[in-house]
Amino acid sequence: MTTIYSARWVVPLSLPPIEDGAVAIEADRIVGVDQRLQVANAYPRARAAHFDHAVILPGLINVHSHLELTSMRGFLENEESDFFSWLRKLTMARLARMTPDDLYVSAAWGACEAVRAGITCVGDASDSGLTSMRALQDLGLRGIVFQESFDAAREDRRFTTRAVHSLCSAARADC
Image (cartoon, rainbow, N blue to C red):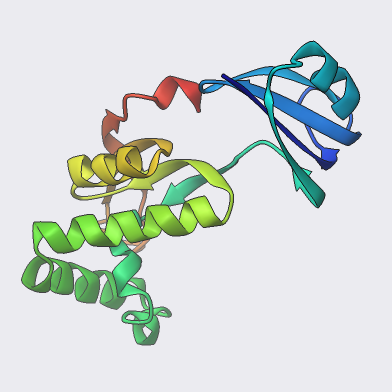
């Protein structure tokens, strides 16, 4: 079944903004983008949903998230000016206090917040990659989950972040 979503503006990636535009969707695929009348004529049996004073645009991408840490919001603020103190407190709290269920709930909470903000794809840095991927899949997000490591042994105390292991969700190719 085709559904047509229309709004005052549609902002596609490959075309200029379309006033009084519409997007036709079949299953999980976009099958038409144009002015509302043209899309309605092309899909006369489609269900329609119109959003008067809205803009329809492609989903946003957050290229660096930490979904499993969502529940720690506010917990680490006193250490924000000292990265190593922040990292130590984070690591101790995560290892000593967060169960696998806690990590999933935190990641799902972060994924819910992403969806509410219009984010449809994330690059998530996680110590529990399978848990974060499950939260992404359960909430219908696309993403790449990777593990982040730090090289803090250098004498000048600068460190390098590098992805050391990549885990991809099933829908990664659509990002």
